[in-house]
Structures are given as C-alpha cells and as structure tokens.
Image 1 (cartoon, rainbow over the protein chains, first blue to last red):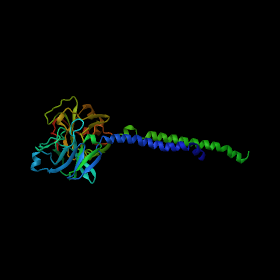
Image 2 (cartoon, rainbow over the protein chains, first blue to last red):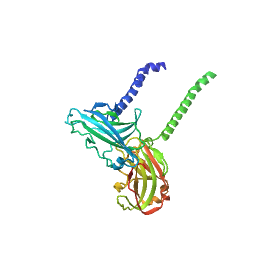
Image 3 (cartoon, rainbow over the protein chains, first blue to last red):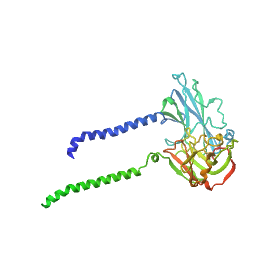
Image 4 (tube, helix red, strand yellow):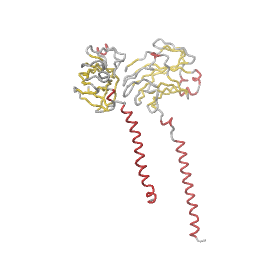
Length: 183
Length: 203
C-alpha cells in the first residue's frame, strides 16, 4: 500500500482536487448564467421609503384593496371570490439611457411570509376586468416620460390572500437584482 | 511431498477461485443495476398527483379538479362553435389554478391517454374552452376542454383505464402531473351536448 501511495500519491491527490473543481466550475457557470437572467436578488425597500434603481427613483405612495362584493368590485367586474390590490408608485426618472429613454419596468405582487415569497401575481392590466386607471396615473412604465409620474399597478388576487404584500419591480438591465417595495 | 508443499500448491487455486467468485458477483451486480436502474424516460418523467373525478388535486404549481366527463357525437360550445368530427368528442369540465406563481402560464398540458394513444385537448373550439387561457395564482379558471378521438378506441379495453393528465407547462417532465383516471366505456354517448362558458373566479 505504501509503495502504491509513493508511486501514485501525487496523481491521486490531483484527481481528488481536479474532479470536484471541474464539477463545481461547470455547474456554477450554468447556474450563474441561469440566475443572471432571473430576478432573484431582492433589494428590500421599506414602506414609505424610496430607492434609486435602474435609472429612476421609486417610491410606493399608496396601496389600496378593493374587496369582493363591494360596489367598486362589482363596478370593476372582478371575478367571484377575488379582491383587487391597487399599488400607486411614484416614479422619478433620472437621466435618459443610451437609447434616450427612461426605464421600462415589469411589476408583480408578492405575498410574503417573513422574507420568503409564498405566492405572486401578474399585473392584471390586461385581464378582462373593468377597472379604470386613475386619470392622474399610468398603468405601465412610460419610457417617454422624463418627469415624475404615478404608476398604478393592479393585481387580481383571491380574497383569502391576506399578505403582507410587496411590489416586485424589475428593470431588465439590473437583473438579477430587483426591488421589493413593501406595500 | 510434505504437507507444507501441498498447501502451497493449493493456495493459488483458492485465490483463483476467490477471484472468479468475486468477478461473477461484480458482473451479476452490474447486470442487476443495469436492468433495474431507471432510464432517461423514468428519471425525467412528470411526478404524478393522482385522484378521482371530483377531487381537488394539488401539485407544485397547478391545482386541478375534474368535475365531469361526457362523450358526445357533436358538441356546441358557449361561443356557438359546433365542431363536426369523423370521430367522437370526450368533453371534460375542469377547474385549474396556479399555486405559487402565474408568470406567463396556462394549461400547457391537457391530455387524454387511452393505452399508448395520447390526445391533446383540441384548440378548434378556441374561446369555447379554457385551452390557451392564462391561469391565476389561487383563482380558479373553470370550463370545458374537448378531445376529438377515434370512435374505435372507445371499444377497446384501454378505454376502461383512460387517464386525463394536466400540467402547467407543455413540457411536463420533472414537474407535477395531475392524473385522473376515467372509465370511458362506462359513459353514455350523447347525440349532442352544449358546454358552459369558461368562468374565471372562485365559487
């Protein structure tokens, strides 16, 4: 055994080091590329606070809930057993980007349990409901708007969802980072 | 010849025998492993969540309930669409919802398997079914799905053990696969049926 170790010890040690290193490097590259295209690193912004991110300053101004069965819910033709969450965000664009545009964003609503996201919902701007966005706000990130404006995001959620909620705000150039604005 | 010399002569044979037994054992073990190890199809297969008609079945990111299954020679959807067929229609009334997130997802897999023959839900009725509609987290989408199948298959033994299968993605590998058995031979064949309009929301 000693003789074998003397002859092959260096090669054995090299294998023990190189094999796991090769596996780690291969998978970390794959995993890294996969993760970089997804919003996985949350930058948490407390309720009422603002954050500069992706070429603009963002601040949640108000979060309202329209409950199932209310006059507003009936008027908005919400589906049965559903509430509507309306999040109003003040967007203050900074300097235009290389294309001469202010940042485009994508939003989702997250339901949290501690720091963990348990459920999330798409923006319902294109859902078949009759909710009308406020006249003083827009329902999407306006890339041609360079003055501060109000972004009104709506989410149809089941009535039993009781939060707490956060607005997930993604700017593609910032991935994998995103803003978690506590609502 | 002394006893010591005899023992020395036997030792190589014992070693050879031992090596032979060990080699046979290794080969046998390798054969068993090869024969019993799951292949690519098995280790990439969807993870079945099975239940009966009427059960609410919950997978990783899909919740589904099959309310009713009917068979008819012709179907008229809520949109007024009526589909002529040289086969026969199997119509299932189902509810589906996303469980954790609804990022661009619909009912990607909706299949009826009869033995080795697998049918995908028809997109011919367009808005008359829930195929192509988006699912919402925690909010049900209820409506019909329709399968246009060969009439001859209803007379086979496999029709007794047909299964409805649903998944969130069109690629159901390595994710939850809702599986609901249905005995097609036990169902009456209606001349004509009408289906309800798809409905979004919880009852």
